[in-house]
Image 1 (tube, helix red, strand yellow):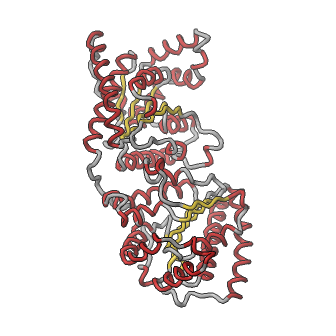
Image 2: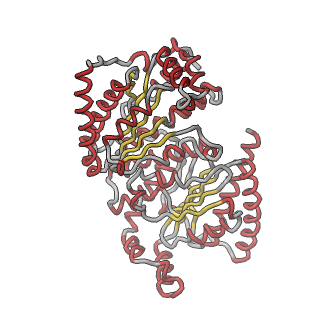
Image 3: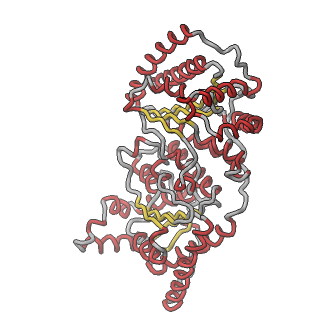
Length: 504
């Protein structure tokens, strides 16, 4: 931990507000409580998701203040989550996973008693997090909070600050009563015994994550009613501002990720990418055997794998996935067919439904269509604004960087066919009774927009083929060729990951 004097700490520089007298305090509390109650309908109508994060010293009164605040809100429109230290199972997912699972739906509140600050600072204090890892996590948190606010979330963060003497007094009082003794942990006592060290660490974290999109509000928590009023003041101000800004466009972020050059779709040769039946069978058997062995190895090495498929309708994604899955232990993989978002998915950040489908370490997740729907079908069908899909390129690059930083192997396939091949396959499906379920009116409508889709796909490939998660085009006029290329790509990527893990 850095020395306190070496950094400017938000805990040392925040402006303290003058506490009103008892009569004024009661009157203002009544006013702010009524104001919060009145905001419920407006929040619901505007579809504003509100995240309220409460952090602070042990015994600073977060729970009691939270209990008073939620009395002003209809219980149908809020949830309270207490984020305990991660379980062994939760540690098998990316750091952000368990936190993002619980973000609120549009028009609702979620109150968090502790969030990612508690885990990060505790790991730093205990020595379980290096300086480099700390900086990475802070970067992840700042990017994620910005992405949430860019996508319409209000993120309100409060830190409850009390003096060493006041904390000692409260802990002593709690321990003297056998009914409240359980509320005092060894960690609380250790925090008080090492108060200055913890204060410096908390101050550093607050400064490192204090951003205009999601600033910290430091609450003087010596008196509980005064603490409640401070939270209500800031929360109501934040809601009012968010309601005014809710429909405003958000700046498009500049890409900061190194990109890997990829050809335009029209420049990709398809006619010469073929295999004979004999070549196909021979390669298929060999590659599936290799992949089966690698699946065991990635499980042993705890390497997560994410395979993403996008492509034209009737390009052969399903058959391709089937040949990959045939080589895998069914206990260690899952295929996620992605359709239009369900109402509860649509009511959250568009990446939420993918965060909740990630594999744990050592497992494989295969996505049949992906988060790239944002910059293809949602873009072209008007399901999101232009500002939304323009921002999404950078947001997706950030999402995939989180996955690769976690240690995941991310493989992205675009399954490419030409327009004539698609028409032939559509016609065959329509004329074959057992295949008619595969063809819909929507497929025909999408085909009419081929040129628009091609333009969108080209932009997507150019802007999201990063060095850490590049796109691989599967030439699929000959499905056999595409299946073998996919298996070869996966086998090569997993071999590389296992070798790196062995040397690392």
